[in-house]
Length: 245
Image (cartoon, rainbow, N blue to C red; front, side):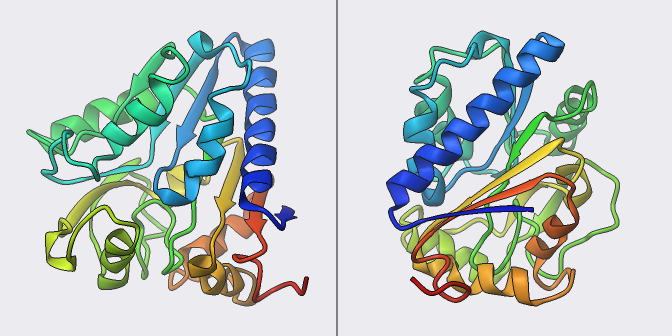
């Protein structure tokens, strides 16, 4: 485990982006391409703003992402496909392959096709955020630590829904979809390197619980402590309950 703490969120985002870019470049040098797994949400804004400016050979990067709401159209402001196309894929001028989680149409067929692509080779860098309730992807507590599926359909808990409203993606909790497609915990943990970029005071409790508690599906992020190469970036606000500045 490697922890990086910065007073300023922008500095945190820049440093995390440089690390991700370096790991992608290493993978391209070693294997001819890099496989990248991305998270979304407002906590990733600073990281993405720096990452898209870095000189990675993006045409050699195969991208996946963690989750998407069931039955939410891509045109909706909260769509993670929309988020990643606008904030990442278009900014870098395209990637070798972008594999999106599609929650519309035949969801189970979409999951099967995406799983087949995902299992072609390991993920080199998994960018995995931590939610206010300690979730990773949309694996809300109590998360399923045992399934060996790659993606599953999950029910979103109330605290998760409130986070989406608080970040401005939906007007009310009732507007948040009840279900989402989420990459599973077991699949996340298969990433060669995990990078967690976790800023803002609303994440301080989840960060503290991640460190204070043993591995538990009541705080899903605790499982990342057992990963051999977990790298965590915090700002002063998110680190407030574990560090004194």
